[in-house]
Length: 119
Image 1 (tube, rainbow, N blue to C red):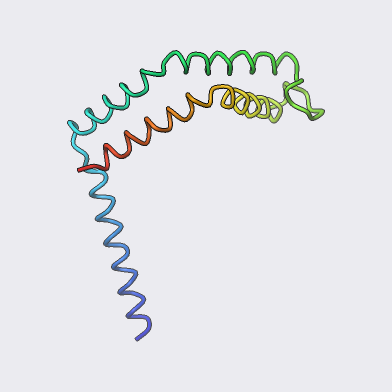
Image 2: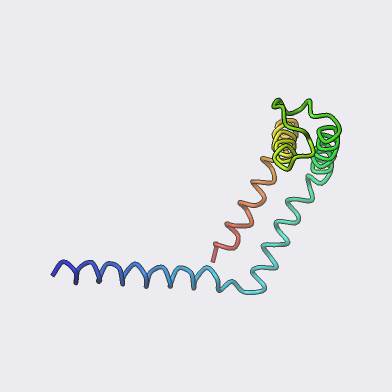
């Protein structure tokens, strides 16, 4: 009896999962295009901000590769883990310096997601 109940709940869960995936993957081309346009419009308003953010990343990464002062361990900058540490340190530095851009980009992505989700 317990196996029948478990199987029933499992089957119900699988069916609801399939229906949910079906609903969310059947977005029309018009809807996708409209939502993409809304995202692009949102993101374009902060294009200069993102240029500053990207400049910060390039400059910081270049400095880090030449001089590992941004990372605090003893590994050399040519080691892949050190390069990863450079990237992480630079990303943290540039995100904090350009917090408005990061927050705005997140808001644009959320708007895109909710646009797709909205019927």
